[in-house]
Amino acid sequence: MQELVRVAVDAMGGDNAPASTVKGAVDALNKSQEISVFLVGQEEVIKKELEQYTYPKERLTIVPASEIIEM
Image 1: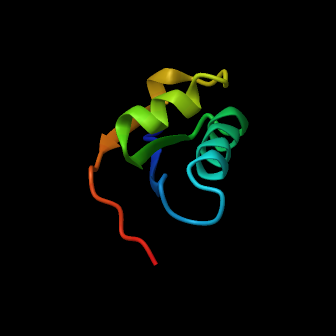
Image 2 (image 1 turned 90 degrees about the vertical axis):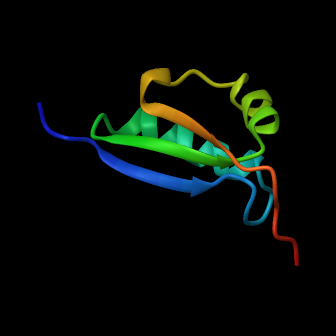
Image 3 (image 1 turned 135 degrees about the vertical axis):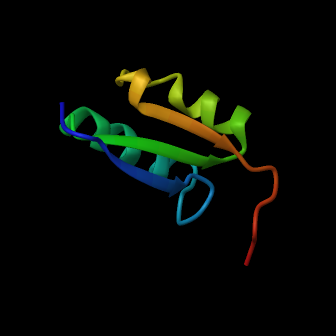
């Protein structure tokens, strides 16, 4: 089996975060079986956002980060 490409995503960064970043990560997981995604950010917020999606859970990891850098 080929090793997965690991992608880390700042789930709390960018416009419309975390909704848009989580959706993008889920879309990527559903399109490619060759990646695993690490969503970095506030764990409970990310979990709540993920509840609305179906995705391969074994290839998504939440990396808790309590601090957010704001503008």
